[in-house]
Amino acid sequence: MKKNLLLIILLFTLLSFGQQSAVSINWKDGEKYTVTDRVVVSIPQFDYVNMDYRYLTKELFFRLNIPVSGYVDASSLQITNVVYESVASEKLGVLDLQKIPTSLKPKIVSSHARNDWYADLYLSPIIKDGSGYKRVKSFSYSYTTGVRRFNPKDTQVVTNSVLSSGEWHRFYVERSGVYKISKSFLQQLGVNVNVDPRRIKIYGNGGRMLPLRNSIPYPDDLTENAIAFIGEEDGNFGDSDYILFYAEGVDNWNAESQTHSNLFADRSYYYVTSQGGEGKRITTQIQPTGPATTTVTSFDDYYYHEEDLVNIGRIGRKWHGEQFNVNNSQDFEFSVPDIDLSTPVSITVNAAAYSVVPT
Image (cartoon, one colour):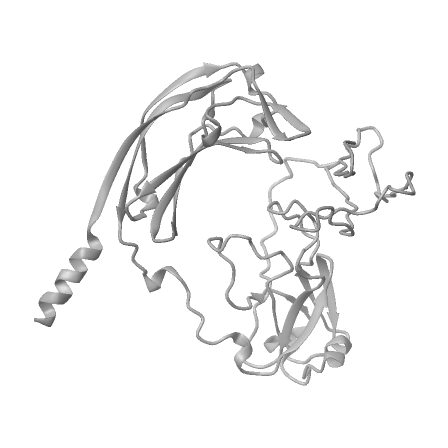
């Protein structure tokens, strides 16, 4: 009896249902799109409920919210019967032409709220077509719903952190770069340096912000970093030996929050231990033997000044720096070594204002 019952349950979890529908996109030319009450842009438009315009990246997506009967298998999405029409580049307004793809790039994402299932279908309604562009007038889509099954092989379950055993010492960095760690520095931390230096290991995940979405992968435990240990070959940690490794600080650009500053931390921590087996090391790459085919004499670089001092709305993740309410003239200096003075420099300023009256 138990075997029969188990078979019925397994069959039920494999049941799935296909759904298919058709969609038309009604384009509206020559209309302005209101981002805020003071920001109006020119972009191609269609039904407002389906428009997903990304103001900061200047990208346009078609979004369709679909009530579904259960979990949607993202890999089952099929887009068929696509009807296009040509569109002149002049009608694309402020869209970033470099980011318009050559295909629809459809995807479907399931969500569950208050005992109901929903799915959001996304695709690019405008694509590149050779030297021109075309937009979607209509299409059909199909997908499969069923029971979402959890497969332990799809994830790496952490049963014990690397910190659960051994002796660990911590240090921090604030800015990204290559760091040199000496024997005396490790001694100040309390690390036992009277060991085979090949056993010294550094762990850390860097100082980037945690992603806002839980669906974005992020390490569950500390990751070992590859390091270069100069002088470890003799098995003795000499006074002149040292470690070189790249540490990631809290000064990385975050596209989700449009900031260089980590909104949740001021320091990026790393952990070092001299116990256990041999550590991870940077491998030596083979030097190319052929002649150079490209000579680089200049490159693009960027510098930024960002201080998170004021939150105008006193809510959310958007912060600004210096205030111009009294001192209306302020200087910001950038030192750029070996700058090429024959090429122009681009400057971007992100500013905001508020007042009790329209301003």
